[in-house]
Structures are given as C-alpha cells and as structure tokens.
Amino acid sequence: MNIENVKKIIQDDKIIFLTYGGFINQTLIVAMTEALEHEAKKSDLDSFVSNNIFVNFIEIAQNIVKYSKQLDNDSKNLNSEGLIVVGKDDLGNYYIHSQNIVSKEDKEVLSKKLNFIRNLNPNEVRKKYKELRRSGKNTHEKGGGIGFYEIAKRSENINFGFSEINKERFYFDFELVVNAKRTENENFDNWRNKIYSIY
Image 1 (cartoon, helix red, strand yellow):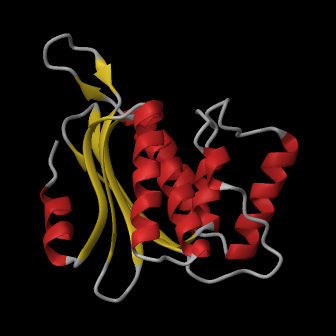
Image 2 (tube, rainbow, N blue to C red):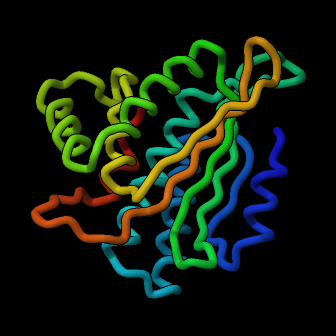
Image 3 (spheres, rainbow, N blue to C red):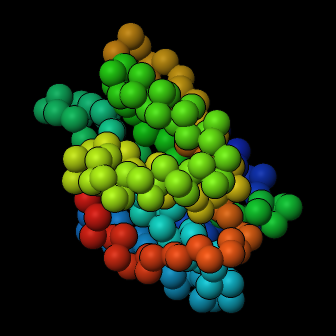
C-alpha cells in the first residue's frame, strides 16, 4: 500500500495518538479504540472531543472492513486491510486520516454518497441522520452507509480522494477534522455502543 502521504502527515505533525497499518477486524477495532481512550486520558482531552474521536475512529475502521479490496499475494483473496492515523496538527486540530484499497464499483458508490453528504449543512446532516435512523434504511447491518452521516455530525469537515492503482482498484484516502464545538441539544451516543455496530 502506498503510504507516502501518511508518512508525511506523521513527519509534519507534532502529536500522533495512534497509527496502524494492516489487517483490521472487529477485535482489533476494540483494542485500538481502548488504546485511544488511554491516550485521551493521558492527554486530558475534553470528553466531548474524545467521544467524537472515538466514534469517528470506529466508523472509519468499520468502513475499511466493509470496503477494503486489498489482494492477498499468496491466496489472491481479498483482505480487510488499511491504514489509520489519529493525531493533532500544529493548529491544535484533531484529525483522523485513513487509506485503503477499494473496487471501482465501491469508488462510485463512495464518491456519490460522500459528495452528497459534504454538500449538506450541519442541520441537514442531523436531519438526514435522524430520518435514516427512524426509517431503518441505510443501517449498519444493511451496509447502507449511515455511518458516514455519523461521521459528518461529529466532524468540522471531511475530505476524500481516489488514486488509481489499475482499472479495477483504487486507493481511497479519507480525512476528517474532529468537531470540537458543542452543539446545543445534541444527544451524543456512548462511543462504546458503537464498537459493536458491524456493517
């Protein structure tokens, strides 16, 4: 996997809470989230910010499990592999950056979905999220992507891009800046409950 851009992030930024590259499954997501919790406590992070970091991290990791199309060189099987970096930049912003390989079909699905979400304002994001929760559509279990609305609720902004590997596979880079501003009357779920939501 091409991780030169992620290496640059690590070199340029002063604080890295977690960096991981390789196979990802539900057990590892739990372990890495607990490691993040430990780092948050050490850094005396505000509970609002840390909760947004945890939930966004879980959603991103589960997206890697769902969409990753990394080929195993020996067996030619597809593995759920990716790279995730959680850190704090020189301006004091907390961010999460991920990279994994996706298929051409998933690239089209992700592009359409993320461009739609990115053009919504915060109130529209929350409204759409509540509609999907009530309707039962786009749930984690159905793989419909409600997690991206969860991410958008808890982020200042999201950015993404695709780099072609060949005609069938692409690197998918996804980055968000964690929301550090409290929203009036926002009901935030306990991040631990999110660990067991599987796409």
